[in-house]
Amino acid sequence: MKTLVWVEHDNSAMADATLAAVTAAGKLGEVHLLVAGSGCRAVAEQAAQIAGVGKVHLADNAAYANALAENVAPLIVELMGHHDAFIAPATSHGKNIAPRVAALLDVMQISDILSVEGEKTFTRPTYAGNAIATVESTDAKLVVTVRGTAFDKAETTGGSATIEDVSGAGDAGLSSFVGAEIAKNERPELTSAKVIVSGGRALKDSETFQQVIMPLADKLGAGVGASRAAVDAGYVPNDYQVGQTGKIVAPEVYIAIGISGAIQHLAGMKDSKTIIAINKDEDAPIFQVADIGLVGDLFKIVPELTEKL
Amino acid sequence: MKGLVPVKRVIDYNVKPRVKADGTGVDLANVKMSMNPFDEIAVEEAIRLKESGAVTEIIAISVGPAKAQETLRTALAMGADSAILVETDDEVEPLAVAKILKAAAAEVQPGLIILGKQAIDDDSNQTGQMLAALMNLPQGTFASKVVVEGDSVTVTREVDGGLETVKLSLPAIVTTDLRLNEPRYASLPNIMKAKKKPLDVKTPADYGVDITPRIKTLKVAEPPVRQAGIKVADVDELVAKLKNMGVA
Ligand SMILES: Cc1cc2nc3c(=O)[nH]c(=O)nc-3n(C[C@H](O)[C@H](O)[C@H](O)COP(=O)(O)OP(=O)(O)OC[C@H]3O[C@@H](n4cnc5c(N)ncnc54)[C@H](O)[C@@H]3O)c2cc1C
Image (cartoon, rainbow over all chains, first blue to last red; front, side, top):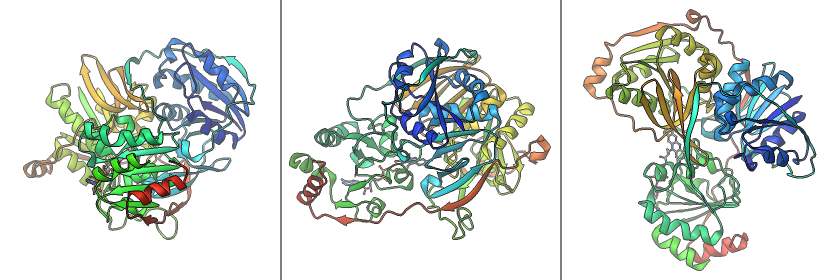
Protein backbone atom coordinates (compact mmCIF):
# COMPACT_ATOMS: atom_id res chain seq x y z
CA MET A 1 0.00 0.00 0.00
CA LYS A 2 1.24 3.49 -0.84
CA THR A 3 0.34 6.15 1.71
CA LEU A 4 0.48 9.93 1.53
CA VAL A 5 1.18 11.61 4.86
CA TRP A 6 0.34 15.23 5.63
CA VAL A 7 3.39 17.03 6.98
CA GLU A 8 2.49 19.42 9.76
CA HIS A 9 4.63 22.58 9.67
CA ASP A 10 4.66 26.36 9.86
CA ASN A 11 6.42 26.87 6.50
CA SER A 12 9.81 26.97 8.17
CA ALA A 13 10.02 23.82 10.30
CA MET A 14 8.31 20.48 10.50
CA ALA A 15 6.23 19.79 13.61
CA ASP A 16 6.70 16.64 15.70
CA ALA A 17 3.11 15.54 15.15
CA THR A 18 4.17 14.44 11.66
CA LEU A 19 6.45 11.76 13.06
CA ALA A 20 3.75 9.67 14.74
CA ALA A 21 1.73 9.77 11.52
CA VAL A 22 4.77 8.53 9.59
CA THR A 23 5.13 5.62 12.02
CA ALA A 24 1.46 4.70 11.55
CA ALA A 25 1.80 4.98 7.77
CA GLY A 26 4.92 2.80 7.84
CA LYS A 27 2.81 -0.05 9.21
CA LEU A 28 0.72 0.07 6.02
CA GLY A 29 3.54 0.11 3.49
CA GLU A 30 5.36 2.68 1.39
CA VAL A 31 5.38 6.19 2.88
CA HIS A 32 5.22 9.36 0.79
CA LEU A 33 4.90 12.81 2.33
CA LEU A 34 3.14 15.98 1.27
CA VAL A 35 4.57 19.33 2.23
CA ALA A 36 2.02 21.94 1.17
CA GLY A 37 2.78 25.52 2.03
CA SER A 38 4.47 28.67 0.86
CA GLY A 39 8.22 29.13 0.83
CA CYS A 40 8.47 25.77 2.55
CA ARG A 41 11.29 24.01 0.69
CA ALA A 42 13.29 23.84 3.93
CA VAL A 43 10.48 21.81 5.47
CA ALA A 44 10.55 19.39 2.54
CA GLU A 45 14.31 19.01 2.94
CA GLN A 46 13.85 18.30 6.64
CA ALA A 47 11.03 15.84 5.92
CA ALA A 48 13.15 14.01 3.34
CA GLN A 49 15.52 13.00 6.16
CA ILE A 50 12.85 11.09 8.10
CA ALA A 51 13.74 7.43 8.23
CA GLY A 52 11.67 5.24 5.96
CA VAL A 53 10.22 7.90 3.67
CA GLY A 54 10.19 7.15 -0.05
CA LYS A 55 9.29 10.47 -1.58
CA VAL A 56 8.36 14.01 -0.58
CA HIS A 57 5.81 15.89 -2.65
CA LEU A 58 6.37 19.61 -2.36
CA ALA A 59 3.52 21.97 -3.23
CA ASP A 60 4.89 25.47 -2.79
CA ASN A 61 2.20 28.03 -3.54
CA ALA A 62 0.94 31.15 -1.74
CA ALA A 63 -2.54 29.57 -1.72
CA TYR A 64 -1.25 26.77 0.52
CA ALA A 65 0.52 29.06 3.02
CA ASN A 66 -2.06 28.62 5.77
CA ALA A 67 -3.30 25.16 4.87
CA LEU A 68 -6.81 26.35 4.05
CA ALA A 69 -8.81 23.14 3.56
CA GLU A 70 -10.64 24.55 0.52
CA ASN A 71 -7.29 24.93 -1.25
CA VAL A 72 -5.29 21.93 -0.11
CA ALA A 73 -8.03 19.26 -0.26
CA PRO A 74 -8.20 19.28 -4.10
CA LEU A 75 -4.40 19.05 -4.22
CA ILE A 76 -4.48 15.96 -1.99
CA VAL A 77 -7.31 14.42 -3.99
CA GLU A 78 -5.18 14.81 -7.11
CA LEU A 79 -2.23 13.06 -5.44
CA MET A 80 -4.56 10.32 -4.20
CA GLY A 81 -4.85 9.28 -7.84
CA HIS A 82 -1.66 7.33 -7.20
CA HIS A 83 -1.81 6.66 -3.46
CA ASP A 84 -3.94 4.18 -1.52
CA ALA A 85 -4.22 6.00 1.78
CA PHE A 86 -4.13 9.56 3.09
CA ILE A 87 -2.86 9.86 6.64
CA ALA A 88 -2.79 13.03 8.71
CA PRO A 89 -1.85 13.68 12.31
CA ALA A 90 -4.95 14.55 14.38
CA THR A 91 -3.82 18.17 14.69
CA SER A 92 -6.14 21.08 14.01
CA HIS A 93 -4.93 21.10 10.39
CA GLY A 94 -5.35 17.34 10.04
CA LYS A 95 -8.82 17.37 11.57
CA ASN A 96 -9.84 20.25 9.34
CA ILE A 97 -8.51 18.88 6.06
CA ALA A 98 -8.81 15.08 6.17
CA PRO A 99 -12.64 14.83 6.23
CA ARG A 100 -12.82 17.22 3.29
CA VAL A 101 -10.48 14.93 1.37
CA ALA A 102 -12.44 11.85 2.44
CA ALA A 103 -15.75 13.23 1.21
CA LEU A 104 -14.23 14.28 -2.12
CA LEU A 105 -12.96 10.70 -2.50
CA ASP A 106 -16.28 9.26 -1.29
CA VAL A 107 -14.49 7.52 1.55
CA MET A 108 -15.52 7.22 5.22
CA GLN A 109 -12.64 8.56 7.30
CA ILE A 110 -11.31 6.73 10.34
CA SER A 111 -10.50 9.38 12.96
CA ASP A 112 -7.84 9.43 15.62
CA ILE A 113 -6.48 5.89 15.34
CA LEU A 114 -4.67 4.31 18.28
CA SER A 115 -3.24 1.31 16.47
CA VAL A 116 -2.93 -0.36 13.09
CA GLU A 117 -4.32 -3.90 13.32
CA GLY A 118 -4.23 -4.82 9.64
CA GLU A 119 -4.26 -3.37 6.11
CA LYS A 120 -7.66 -1.79 6.73
CA THR A 121 -8.24 -2.43 10.41
CA PHE A 122 -7.58 0.05 13.18
CA THR A 123 -8.55 0.82 16.76
CA ARG A 124 -9.93 4.20 17.69
CA PRO A 125 -11.38 5.82 20.81
CA THR A 126 -15.07 6.68 21.03
CA TYR A 127 -17.22 8.09 23.86
CA ALA A 128 -14.38 10.22 25.24
CA GLY A 129 -12.09 7.22 25.24
CA ASN A 130 -14.48 5.09 27.29
CA ALA A 131 -14.95 2.62 24.45
CA ILE A 132 -12.21 1.50 22.10
CA ALA A 133 -13.59 0.36 18.76
CA THR A 134 -11.81 -1.96 16.36
CA VAL A 135 -12.97 -0.94 12.91
CA GLU A 136 -12.38 -2.10 9.37
CA SER A 137 -12.74 0.06 6.31
CA THR A 138 -14.49 -1.34 3.24
CA ASP A 139 -13.62 1.63 1.03
CA ALA A 140 -11.24 1.39 -1.91
CA LYS A 141 -8.97 4.05 -0.40
CA LEU A 142 -8.23 4.97 3.19
CA VAL A 143 -8.39 8.34 4.92
CA VAL A 144 -7.10 8.21 8.49
CA THR A 145 -6.08 10.64 11.21
CA VAL A 146 -3.56 9.55 13.82
CA ARG A 147 -3.48 10.20 17.56
CA GLY A 148 0.03 11.45 18.25
CA THR A 149 0.40 9.91 21.69
CA ALA A 150 -0.42 6.42 20.42
CA PHE A 151 2.55 5.97 18.08
CA ASP A 152 6.30 6.29 18.50
CA LYS A 153 7.93 9.10 16.63
CA ALA A 154 9.76 8.17 13.45
CA GLU A 155 13.48 8.95 13.42
CA THR A 156 14.18 12.38 11.97
CA THR A 157 17.39 11.25 10.35
CA GLY A 158 18.53 8.38 8.22
CA GLY A 159 16.24 8.96 5.26
CA SER A 160 17.14 10.42 1.89
CA ALA A 161 13.86 10.76 0.06
CA THR A 162 13.64 12.55 -3.27
CA ILE A 163 11.69 15.81 -3.37
CA GLU A 164 9.23 16.14 -6.21
CA ASP A 165 7.52 19.44 -6.98
CA VAL A 166 3.78 19.27 -7.55
CA SER A 167 1.60 22.17 -8.59
CA GLY A 168 -2.11 21.72 -7.80
CA ALA A 169 -4.88 24.15 -8.61
CA GLY A 170 -3.99 26.73 -5.95
CA ASP A 171 -6.66 29.09 -4.68
CA ALA A 172 -10.20 27.69 -4.78
CA GLY A 173 -11.57 31.20 -4.28
CA LEU A 174 -13.83 30.21 -1.38
CA SER A 175 -11.90 31.41 1.64
CA SER A 176 -9.06 33.61 2.74
CA PHE A 177 -6.76 33.76 5.73
CA VAL A 178 -7.18 36.88 7.86
CA GLY A 179 -4.71 36.35 10.68
CA ALA A 180 -3.69 34.33 13.70
CA GLU A 181 -3.04 34.87 17.36
CA ILE A 182 -0.51 32.23 18.12
CA ALA A 183 0.88 32.75 21.59
CA LYS A 184 4.66 32.56 21.87
CA ASN A 185 5.25 29.97 24.49
CA GLU A 186 8.68 29.33 25.96
CA ARG A 187 7.45 26.23 27.71
CA PRO A 188 7.55 22.68 26.33
CA GLU A 189 4.66 21.96 23.98
CA LEU A 190 1.87 19.99 25.65
CA THR A 191 1.86 17.19 23.12
CA SER A 192 5.56 16.48 23.61
CA ALA A 193 6.25 17.64 27.19
CA LYS A 194 7.75 15.09 29.62
CA VAL A 195 6.01 16.72 32.57
CA ILE A 196 2.74 18.67 32.54
CA VAL A 197 1.31 20.78 35.33
CA SER A 198 -2.39 21.38 34.79
CA GLY A 199 -4.72 23.69 36.65
CA GLY A 200 -8.49 23.68 37.00
CA ARG A 201 -11.38 25.86 38.04
CA ALA A 202 -10.05 26.01 41.60
CA LEU A 203 -7.32 28.42 40.45
CA LYS A 204 -9.81 31.31 40.70
CA ASP A 205 -8.54 33.68 38.02
CA SER A 206 -5.81 34.31 35.52
CA GLU A 207 -3.53 36.03 38.02
CA THR A 208 -3.81 33.28 40.59
CA PHE A 209 -3.21 30.65 37.90
CA GLN A 210 0.00 32.46 36.93
CA GLN A 211 1.14 32.82 40.54
CA VAL A 212 0.41 29.26 41.65
CA ILE A 213 0.90 27.04 38.60
CA MET A 214 3.72 28.71 36.67
CA PRO A 215 6.45 28.64 39.37
CA LEU A 216 5.90 24.91 39.85
CA ALA A 217 5.99 24.35 36.09
CA ASP A 218 9.20 26.38 35.91
CA LYS A 219 10.80 24.27 38.62
CA LEU A 220 9.93 21.08 36.78
CA GLY A 221 10.57 22.38 33.26
CA ALA A 222 7.00 21.37 32.58
CA GLY A 223 4.38 22.23 30.00
CA VAL A 224 1.24 23.89 31.34
CA GLY A 225 -2.26 22.58 30.72
CA ALA A 226 -5.73 23.34 32.01
CA SER A 227 -9.23 21.98 32.31
CA ARG A 228 -12.03 23.31 30.16
CA ALA A 229 -13.45 25.17 33.16
CA ALA A 230 -10.17 27.06 33.59
CA VAL A 231 -10.06 27.95 29.90
CA ASP A 232 -13.73 28.94 29.73
CA ALA A 233 -13.21 31.24 32.71
CA GLY A 234 -10.31 32.90 30.90
CA TYR A 235 -7.49 31.86 33.25
CA VAL A 236 -5.45 30.67 30.26
CA PRO A 237 -5.86 30.60 26.44
CA ASN A 238 -7.80 27.88 24.62
CA ASP A 239 -4.73 25.98 23.46
CA TYR A 240 -4.01 24.96 27.07
CA GLN A 241 -7.12 22.77 27.24
CA VAL A 242 -6.52 19.09 27.81
CA GLY A 243 -9.34 16.65 27.15
CA GLN A 244 -11.79 14.98 24.82
CA THR A 245 -12.15 18.13 22.81
CA GLY A 246 -8.81 19.72 23.59
CA LYS A 247 -5.28 18.34 23.49
CA ILE A 248 -4.52 14.68 24.01
CA VAL A 249 -1.39 14.30 26.13
CA ALA A 250 0.60 11.42 27.56
CA PRO A 251 3.60 12.78 29.45
CA GLU A 252 5.77 10.88 31.91
CA VAL A 253 4.16 12.84 34.73
CA TYR A 254 0.85 14.73 34.72
CA ILE A 255 0.07 16.84 37.77
CA ALA A 256 -3.62 17.77 38.03
CA ILE A 257 -4.18 20.64 40.43
CA GLY A 258 -7.69 21.63 41.45
CA ILE A 259 -9.18 19.53 38.66
CA SER A 260 -12.11 17.26 39.53
CA GLY A 261 -11.50 14.64 36.83
CA ALA A 262 -14.59 14.79 34.59
CA ILE A 263 -14.60 12.08 31.91
CA GLN A 264 -13.98 14.73 29.27
CA HIS A 265 -10.80 15.79 31.03
CA LEU A 266 -9.65 12.21 31.71
CA ALA A 267 -10.06 11.48 27.99
CA GLY A 268 -7.13 13.76 27.30
CA MET A 269 -4.64 12.65 29.94
CA LYS A 270 -5.34 9.20 31.29
CA ASP A 271 -2.61 7.63 29.17
CA SER A 272 -0.01 9.63 31.10
CA LYS A 273 2.58 7.39 32.69
CA THR A 274 2.21 8.75 36.20
CA ILE A 275 -0.72 10.89 37.31
CA ILE A 276 -0.46 13.04 40.39
CA ALA A 277 -3.55 14.76 41.76
CA ILE A 278 -3.83 17.57 44.26
CA ASN A 279 -7.40 18.24 45.32
CA LYS A 280 -9.12 19.22 48.53
CA ASP A 281 -12.00 16.80 47.93
CA GLU A 282 -10.88 13.27 48.75
CA ASP A 283 -13.78 11.89 46.72
CA ALA A 284 -12.87 13.78 43.55
CA PRO A 285 -12.96 11.35 40.58
CA ILE A 286 -9.42 12.36 39.60
CA PHE A 287 -8.16 10.23 42.51
CA GLN A 288 -9.60 7.12 40.83
CA VAL A 289 -7.00 7.42 38.08
CA ALA A 290 -4.18 9.06 40.05
CA ASP A 291 -1.09 7.07 40.96
CA ILE A 292 -0.25 9.55 43.68
CA GLY A 293 -2.83 11.70 45.41
CA LEU A 294 -2.51 14.47 47.93
CA VAL A 295 -5.69 15.69 49.59
CA GLY A 296 -5.62 19.28 50.71
CA ASP A 297 -5.77 22.94 49.86
CA LEU A 298 -3.78 23.61 46.73
CA PHE A 299 -3.05 27.17 47.80
CA LYS A 300 -1.01 25.75 50.68
CA ILE A 301 0.31 22.64 48.97
CA VAL A 302 1.52 23.99 45.65
CA PRO A 303 3.66 26.87 46.97
CA GLU A 304 5.18 24.54 49.56
CA LEU A 305 5.88 21.94 46.88
CA THR A 306 7.47 24.52 44.60
CA GLU A 307 9.61 25.71 47.44
CA LYS A 308 10.80 22.24 48.45
CA LEU A 309 11.70 21.01 45.00
CA MET B 1 -30.58 34.23 4.77
CA LYS B 2 -31.73 30.94 6.25
CA GLY B 3 -29.72 29.04 8.82
CA LEU B 4 -29.67 25.24 8.81
CA VAL B 5 -28.61 23.56 12.04
CA PRO B 6 -28.04 19.79 12.15
CA VAL B 7 -28.42 18.29 15.64
CA LYS B 8 -27.69 14.79 16.96
CA ARG B 9 -29.23 12.86 19.81
CA VAL B 10 -26.41 11.37 21.87
CA ILE B 11 -25.67 10.00 25.32
CA ASP B 12 -25.86 12.81 27.88
CA TYR B 13 -22.39 14.19 28.59
CA ASN B 14 -22.82 13.56 32.32
CA VAL B 15 -23.31 9.83 31.86
CA LYS B 16 -20.34 7.50 32.03
CA PRO B 17 -20.58 5.20 29.00
CA ARG B 18 -20.47 1.44 29.63
CA VAL B 19 -19.33 -1.04 27.04
CA LYS B 20 -21.75 -3.93 26.48
CA ALA B 21 -20.55 -7.28 27.78
CA ASP B 22 -20.77 -8.83 24.30
CA GLY B 23 -18.39 -6.23 22.88
CA THR B 24 -20.80 -4.94 20.24
CA GLY B 25 -21.02 -1.38 21.41
CA VAL B 26 -21.95 0.93 24.25
CA ASP B 27 -25.03 0.17 26.33
CA LEU B 28 -27.59 2.89 25.68
CA ALA B 29 -30.62 1.15 27.17
CA ASN B 30 -32.18 3.31 29.89
CA VAL B 31 -29.42 5.85 29.55
CA LYS B 32 -30.17 9.57 29.56
CA MET B 33 -29.89 11.01 26.06
CA SER B 34 -29.55 14.68 25.13
CA MET B 35 -28.65 16.98 22.30
CA ASN B 36 -24.95 16.78 21.49
CA PRO B 37 -23.44 19.73 23.46
CA PHE B 38 -21.67 21.14 20.42
CA ASP B 39 -24.98 21.16 18.54
CA GLU B 40 -26.60 23.14 21.35
CA ILE B 41 -23.89 25.71 20.78
CA ALA B 42 -24.73 25.63 17.06
CA VAL B 43 -28.43 26.21 17.72
CA GLU B 44 -27.58 29.05 20.09
CA GLU B 45 -25.32 30.70 17.53
CA ALA B 46 -28.04 30.53 14.87
CA ILE B 47 -30.50 32.12 17.28
CA ARG B 48 -28.06 34.92 18.08
CA LEU B 49 -27.53 35.53 14.39
CA LYS B 50 -31.29 35.68 13.97
CA GLU B 51 -31.57 38.11 16.87
CA SER B 52 -28.93 40.32 15.24
CA GLY B 53 -30.77 40.18 11.91
CA ALA B 54 -28.14 38.24 9.95
CA VAL B 55 -30.31 35.12 9.80
CA THR B 56 -34.04 35.26 9.03
CA GLU B 57 -35.16 31.70 9.69
CA ILE B 58 -33.68 28.67 11.46
CA ILE B 59 -34.32 25.10 10.38
CA ALA B 60 -33.08 22.33 12.65
CA ILE B 61 -32.48 18.90 11.15
CA SER B 62 -31.61 15.55 12.68
CA VAL B 63 -30.75 12.17 11.23
CA GLY B 64 -31.69 9.46 13.69
CA PRO B 65 -34.40 7.39 15.35
CA ALA B 66 -37.97 8.58 16.05
CA LYS B 67 -36.80 9.68 19.50
CA ALA B 68 -34.58 12.31 17.88
CA GLN B 69 -37.84 14.26 17.61
CA GLU B 70 -37.22 15.18 21.26
CA THR B 71 -33.86 16.64 20.31
CA LEU B 72 -35.49 18.64 17.53
CA ARG B 73 -38.18 19.86 19.94
CA THR B 74 -35.38 21.10 22.19
CA ALA B 75 -33.93 23.05 19.26
CA LEU B 76 -37.40 24.44 18.51
CA ALA B 77 -37.88 25.40 22.15
CA MET B 78 -34.55 27.21 22.14
CA GLY B 79 -35.65 29.23 19.11
CA ALA B 80 -35.46 27.30 15.83
CA ASP B 81 -38.47 27.91 13.57
CA SER B 82 -39.02 24.50 12.04
CA ALA B 83 -37.48 21.06 12.03
CA ILE B 84 -36.84 18.06 9.83
CA LEU B 85 -36.31 14.55 11.13
CA VAL B 86 -34.66 12.17 8.71
CA GLU B 87 -35.77 9.02 10.43
CA THR B 88 -33.78 5.82 10.53
CA ASP B 89 -32.94 3.27 13.20
CA ASP B 90 -29.67 2.43 11.51
CA GLU B 91 -26.42 3.97 12.59
CA VAL B 92 -25.53 6.58 10.02
CA GLU B 93 -21.89 7.43 9.42
CA PRO B 94 -20.72 11.03 9.01
CA LEU B 95 -20.29 10.65 5.23
CA ALA B 96 -23.89 9.50 4.79
CA VAL B 97 -25.13 12.20 7.17
CA ALA B 98 -23.28 14.77 5.07
CA LYS B 99 -24.95 13.41 1.92
CA ILE B 100 -28.38 13.65 3.53
CA LEU B 101 -27.65 17.19 4.72
CA LYS B 102 -26.51 18.16 1.24
CA ALA B 103 -29.79 16.94 -0.21
CA ALA B 104 -31.79 18.73 2.49
CA ALA B 105 -29.80 21.91 1.93
CA ALA B 106 -30.64 21.77 -1.76
CA GLU B 107 -34.30 22.18 -0.73
CA VAL B 108 -33.84 24.62 2.16
CA GLN B 109 -31.18 26.78 0.42
CA PRO B 110 -29.50 28.03 3.61
CA GLY B 111 -26.88 30.78 3.60
CA LEU B 112 -25.20 29.32 6.64
CA ILE B 113 -25.07 25.78 7.97
CA ILE B 114 -23.85 25.57 11.57
CA LEU B 115 -22.89 22.17 12.99
CA GLY B 116 -21.17 20.95 16.14
CA LYS B 117 -17.49 20.19 15.57
CA GLN B 118 -17.89 16.66 16.84
CA ALA B 119 -20.48 14.40 18.42
CA ILE B 120 -19.50 13.15 21.86
CA ASP B 121 -20.47 9.56 21.03
CA ASP B 122 -18.41 8.64 17.97
CA ASP B 123 -15.98 11.57 18.38
CA SER B 124 -15.46 11.60 14.60
CA ASN B 125 -15.19 15.35 13.93
CA GLN B 126 -16.04 14.93 10.23
CA THR B 127 -19.58 15.83 9.22
CA GLY B 128 -19.17 19.59 8.73
CA GLN B 129 -15.99 19.28 6.71
CA MET B 130 -17.54 16.51 4.59
CA LEU B 131 -20.66 18.55 3.94
CA ALA B 132 -18.52 21.51 2.90
CA ALA B 133 -16.63 19.26 0.48
CA LEU B 134 -19.77 17.77 -1.05
CA MET B 135 -21.37 21.20 -1.50
CA ASN B 136 -18.10 22.82 -2.60
CA LEU B 137 -18.51 25.45 0.11
CA PRO B 138 -15.94 27.04 2.43
CA GLN B 139 -15.62 25.71 5.99
CA GLY B 140 -14.93 27.53 9.23
CA THR B 141 -14.29 24.70 11.67
CA PHE B 142 -13.83 24.85 15.49
CA ALA B 143 -15.34 28.34 15.64
CA SER B 144 -15.03 30.54 18.70
CA LYS B 145 -16.44 33.63 16.98
CA VAL B 146 -18.71 34.10 13.95
CA VAL B 147 -19.35 37.47 12.34
CA VAL B 148 -21.58 37.80 9.29
CA GLU B 149 -20.92 40.85 7.13
CA GLY B 150 -22.62 41.28 3.77
CA ASP B 151 -21.86 38.29 1.59
CA SER B 152 -19.15 36.81 3.78
CA VAL B 153 -18.63 35.40 7.24
CA THR B 154 -15.53 35.85 9.36
CA VAL B 155 -14.79 32.92 11.62
CA THR B 156 -12.25 32.83 14.45
CA ARG B 157 -11.10 29.26 14.96
CA GLU B 158 -9.56 27.45 17.93
CA VAL B 159 -6.39 25.83 16.61
CA ASP B 160 -3.46 23.99 18.22
CA GLY B 161 -1.36 27.08 18.85
CA GLY B 162 -4.14 29.53 19.70
CA LEU B 163 -6.62 31.29 17.44
CA GLU B 164 -6.85 31.79 13.70
CA THR B 165 -9.27 33.88 11.65
CA VAL B 166 -10.57 33.09 8.17
CA LYS B 167 -12.99 34.89 5.89
CA LEU B 168 -15.43 32.74 3.95
CA SER B 169 -17.77 33.64 1.12
CA LEU B 170 -21.43 32.81 1.79
CA PRO B 171 -23.02 30.30 1.69
CA ALA B 172 -20.65 28.65 4.14
CA ILE B 173 -20.33 25.86 6.70
CA VAL B 174 -19.36 26.60 10.30
CA THR B 175 -18.58 24.05 13.03
CA THR B 176 -18.72 25.12 16.65
CA ASP B 177 -16.15 24.86 19.41
CA LEU B 178 -16.88 25.10 23.13
CA ARG B 179 -16.27 28.79 23.62
CA LEU B 180 -18.45 30.16 20.81
CA ASN B 181 -21.30 30.90 23.22
CA GLU B 182 -23.18 29.59 26.21
CA PRO B 183 -26.41 27.96 25.05
CA ARG B 184 -29.63 29.19 26.63
CA TYR B 185 -32.10 26.99 28.45
CA ALA B 186 -35.53 26.79 26.87
CA SER B 187 -38.19 28.48 29.00
CA LEU B 188 -41.37 26.62 29.86
CA PRO B 189 -43.58 28.81 27.62
CA ASN B 190 -41.13 28.24 24.76
CA ILE B 191 -41.19 24.50 25.35
CA MET B 192 -44.98 24.65 25.07
CA LYS B 193 -44.80 26.78 21.92
CA ALA B 194 -42.26 24.43 20.38
CA LYS B 195 -44.83 21.63 20.38
CA LYS B 196 -46.78 23.52 17.74
CA LYS B 197 -43.86 24.35 15.47
CA PRO B 198 -43.67 22.38 12.21
CA LEU B 199 -41.65 19.15 12.26
CA ASP B 200 -41.37 17.23 8.99
CA VAL B 201 -40.50 13.55 9.01
CA LYS B 202 -38.57 12.10 6.09
CA THR B 203 -36.33 9.12 5.41
CA PRO B 204 -32.85 8.81 3.91
CA ALA B 205 -34.52 7.24 0.87
CA ASP B 206 -36.61 10.40 0.36
CA TYR B 207 -33.30 12.16 -0.24
CA GLY B 208 -31.99 9.30 -2.37
CA VAL B 209 -29.07 8.63 -0.06
CA ASP B 210 -27.61 5.17 0.46
CA ILE B 211 -26.63 4.91 4.13
CA THR B 212 -24.95 1.51 3.97
CA PRO B 213 -21.98 1.72 6.37
CA ARG B 214 -18.49 1.83 4.90
CA ILE B 215 -16.85 0.93 8.17
CA LYS B 216 -17.38 -2.37 9.96
CA THR B 217 -17.13 -2.31 13.72
CA LEU B 218 -15.47 -5.59 14.62
CA LYS B 219 -15.35 -5.09 18.36
CA VAL B 220 -15.86 -2.52 21.09
CA ALA B 221 -13.86 -2.87 24.27
CA GLU B 222 -13.25 -1.04 27.52
CA PRO B 223 -9.97 0.85 27.58
CA PRO B 224 -7.33 -0.51 29.96
CA VAL B 225 -8.44 0.56 33.43
CA ARG B 226 -6.10 2.56 35.57
CA GLN B 227 -5.89 1.46 39.14
CA ALA B 228 -6.16 4.13 41.77
CA GLY B 229 -2.75 4.49 43.40
CA ILE B 230 -1.69 5.69 46.77
CA LYS B 231 -2.33 8.82 48.75
CA VAL B 232 0.59 10.63 50.28
CA ALA B 233 0.18 12.39 53.61
CA ASP B 234 2.05 15.59 52.95
CA VAL B 235 4.22 17.61 50.62
CA ASP B 236 7.46 16.06 51.88
CA GLU B 237 6.27 12.63 50.89
CA LEU B 238 5.25 13.93 47.47
CA VAL B 239 8.64 15.58 47.00
CA ALA B 240 10.33 12.29 47.87
CA LYS B 241 8.21 10.48 45.26
CA LEU B 242 9.00 13.05 42.60
CA LYS B 243 12.70 12.78 43.36
CA ASN B 244 12.45 9.00 43.17
CA MET B 245 10.94 9.28 39.71
CA GLY B 246 13.80 11.54 38.70
CA VAL B 247 11.47 14.41 37.87
CA ALA B 248 12.84 16.72 40.52
C1 LIG C 1 -18.95 18.71 25.09
C2 LIG C 1 -18.04 18.87 26.25
C3 LIG C 1 -16.69 18.79 26.05
C4 LIG C 1 -15.80 18.97 27.10
N1 LIG C 1 -14.46 18.89 26.86
C5 LIG C 1 -13.61 19.05 27.90
C6 LIG C 1 -12.20 18.96 27.69
O1 LIG C 1 -11.71 18.75 26.59
N2 LIG C 1 -11.39 19.13 28.77
C7 LIG C 1 -11.87 19.38 30.04
O2 LIG C 1 -11.07 19.54 30.97
N3 LIG C 1 -13.19 19.45 30.24
C8 LIG C 1 -14.07 19.31 29.20
N4 LIG C 1 -15.41 19.43 29.44
C9 LIG C 1 -15.86 19.92 30.77
C10 LIG C 1 -15.93 18.86 31.85
O3 LIG C 1 -17.17 18.20 31.78
C11 LIG C 1 -15.79 19.54 33.23
O4 LIG C 1 -16.80 20.50 33.39
C12 LIG C 1 -14.45 20.23 33.46
O5 LIG C 1 -13.39 19.38 33.11
C13 LIG C 1 -14.34 20.66 34.90
O6 LIG C 1 -13.15 21.40 35.11
P1 LIG C 1 -12.47 21.44 36.55
O7 LIG C 1 -12.13 20.06 36.97
O8 LIG C 1 -11.38 22.44 36.48
O9 LIG C 1 -13.61 22.10 37.44
P2 LIG C 1 -14.51 21.45 38.58
O10 LIG C 1 -15.18 20.23 38.13
O11 LIG C 1 -15.31 22.56 39.12
O12 LIG C 1 -13.45 20.98 39.67
C14 LIG C 1 -12.73 21.84 40.48
C15 LIG C 1 -11.99 20.97 41.48
O13 LIG C 1 -11.15 21.78 42.26
C16 LIG C 1 -11.16 21.31 43.60
N5 LIG C 1 -10.79 22.43 44.44
C17 LIG C 1 -11.48 23.58 44.66
N6 LIG C 1 -10.79 24.39 45.48
C18 LIG C 1 -9.65 23.75 45.81
C19 LIG C 1 -8.52 24.08 46.61
N7 LIG C 1 -8.44 25.24 47.28
N8 LIG C 1 -7.52 23.16 46.72
C20 LIG C 1 -7.59 21.97 46.07
N9 LIG C 1 -8.63 21.63 45.28
C21 LIG C 1 -9.65 22.51 45.15
C22 LIG C 1 -12.57 20.82 43.81
O14 LIG C 1 -12.61 19.85 44.84
C23 LIG C 1 -12.91 20.22 42.45
O15 LIG C 1 -12.60 18.84 42.40
C24 LIG C 1 -16.30 19.23 28.39
C25 LIG C 1 -17.68 19.27 28.60
C26 LIG C 1 -18.54 19.10 27.56
C27 LIG C 1 -20.01 19.17 27.81
